[in-house]
Length: 469
Image 1 (cartoon, rainbow, N blue to C red):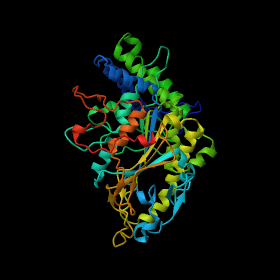
Image 2: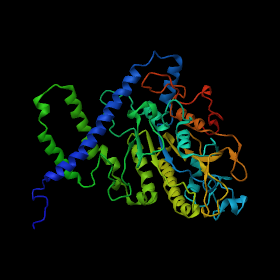
Image 3: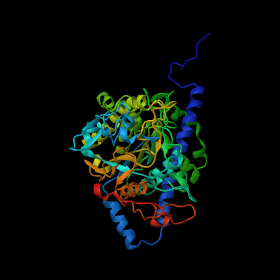
Image 4: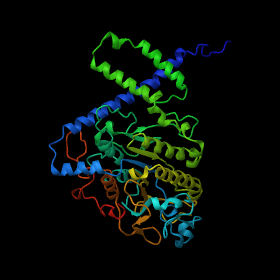
């Protein structure tokens, strides 16, 4: 039997065109959503009330804000604070397990977990918050609270990434300025899953989840890059589909067709144009890729830096696997060096490129893990959920490096001083981004909802993080 193959002229088979059309449709849908989101955001701003002096002051802060974008390292499942950013070497082996040592950092007096050797070299670039607290031990509620600053209630509130997108993601274009095709809010690589990122604000503010693996030979971003077609094949598909699309010329002047043509152009620019190249990590020097670590997480950190360089406003790296009830320490010996290498290199690389001053790096999970090791069967040295006290790392964008905020007690079981609640940290980041925490969020029914919770909502607060801003 004669094998099926492409013909000698390099044309695509019917099956390849049909398969490619599915990828094109996904890209077209994505581009249409981006155009719609941009116009809706502009309409929302245009429909606002007459500016007050407070609005003018808020606009001035937005214009002069130091931070322009955020990279969030989301450690889904809950990382252990005592093995990472708040080690307790004097607490004894019942608490430290086999990880009883620490790494001295390049800032006198600051020590972190013994497996975080790369992060120890750049401690002058980040601040540690060792007194994060909310007291919630359930994944869903803790994730929601840590990402939104609020407890579940009548409204489903948006996560910080969606709020930043609403205020920063759709800037007004200046005359002659080209629209940025990179989505303003991206998750590498899978959706976070335990909450609705956009909440009541709706699909316009949801992140684009890339799927794929940045460490693969080709980072196949879902809806943009087909793993089965080369760039040349995708260009030929564009030509063939263009030849078949005669409707636009048959019915000229139709706005809906013009919109579709624009969306199609955006989709192709993402697929085969310069905008899509942001996802091609093969254009990076091998040395740089190795420096980040040839792992899915390490290459996600590199991809995040490239996305911010190209105009993305909020990137979440969804790095799960931290729910270590069983066999905790073998997991940490695998995961902590990977986290250390990727995050430490990201901070250093942003600094080397002059990007750290304008980019907030925010590393956090939904809670910490129990300081006392569960050595009994069936846990075999596990740590459980712990919302009473946990840690976060913040860097760049106006946060001062080389500092520690708050302390926990000698075993890391309670906050000793300076409690920091999720809303305190989120509100501080909004201010660094030039977002007024008292500003109203886009609401489908026009309801006034503050960007951060007010005292009337009953949320606890330790105040903004003025110590490190």
